[in-house]
Length: 163
Image: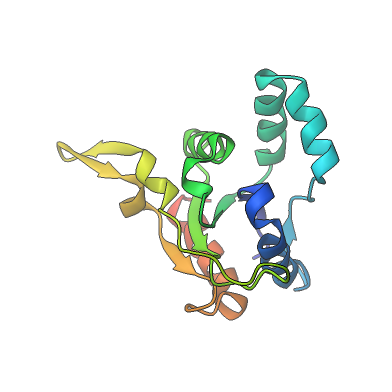
């Protein structure tokens, strides 16, 4: 089944890695992702304030069933990635993380592995705090063969969320 997917990532640091991952996804028939925003458009939205950014994120999440967090070296601390994860949880989206540090940036090569941004949140289950990192699976794009397996990862996240 085709899934509409929202990709969350650190634009400045990881865009060239993200393009490679997304391009491998969108060339497959029947798969759909949100369109990319270019740097100029993002900078324009940022200048309009926090509420405008939150509104834009909600608009992008609308109609999607899964949020894929593309995890680079510095993704963990990105304010808007954290917001996108929080909103995706609140909206009941399926979620998963894909480490992309091993994807070769054409200008900078590979990068160091970053921390899992799902570690920022937890929920109470059976009287204990369960971090999101235990609820949402993560994969490594290179090691786990994301090109061949990402569609099944996304489908698994959607099914786990009841979507």
